[in-house]
Image (tube, helix red, strand yellow):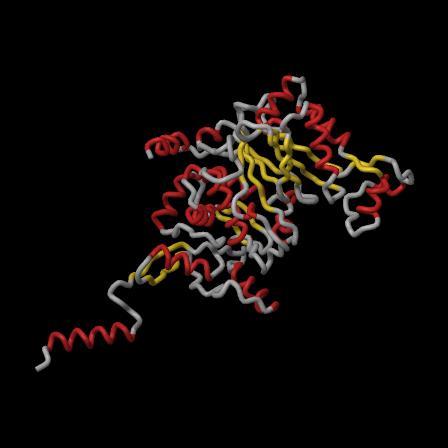
Length: 425
């Protein structure tokens, strides 16, 4: 004789199975990071139209979400893993795991600012998504930020939206350019931003998560999707993380932010469009030998004009140069005066080729094959002291007409409380 309790249990199990429900299933509420335009439409849906037009298949489930500010996701076993898969298939991650932006986490992130959650910070290219404080906080959670990082991130979002930065060009070009964050001022020490050894590398939460968050904001809110609107031919690892800080203790000159027009005591974030990195080995070089080496690297680049060029001078080399009486101004003048190539080579490289944008008008009137022509013309040569001990410096070319942009970081009224909480962790 069959036990009635067993029959009931089997029937109930079958019913639950038919409905797609298991005893372990639960609903998790997470914020939707997709950008919205001013008319309320989602950036994802406009991207979907682009994908259909060009027959693109990835992301697999783009635009398949409720459209609510907070999404309810049914999970069965591994909450974090399943939410990550859900976000990944909708095009909301950079391919690395994210932290689920639950309501509790987003509310905690919002303690890092005293601006209202609904406040619009900027409208971001290429698809015109509006970056509100709340959307920035959602993506900050996803990237692994702490609340006290919000003032830098908000400032960075404001900067990339400036016309002179040309986010639309950077976010859609076939070139491998990425927004690079440079921080200077007392906030570097307060937030433990790495300005020493491996400053552009791994190992520091602030550098990694703030930069990652900015890239995800441009992706999710702005709509710069790899292979859809972001058409970078090869790309570069800096598309995940590209951030460093000035080493104020090793810097023998004025802070970088003073060169950019800000007060000495200010906390400043600057952003440039970084094309890539060129290591410069200064071991055994004299002061002039090092600077000539930098000029030779510049003359080997392939564009006739760069709006911004960043020279990161290693700390030991910076000390040597300062002791020899070199100022930033003298360094810049010496390098640019020697970053030249003969007109014969210049003509072969540019005038006879496809890249003519940025060539000064007077160059077209040159007829002496041996005449030395500046290559490239540089709008602004930034000189930054960063990194640890050693004599290995770095040159970072900026992209085309994109200018370096900077602003003072506005700290919230609860800044001291945020720093105190940081110390207690």
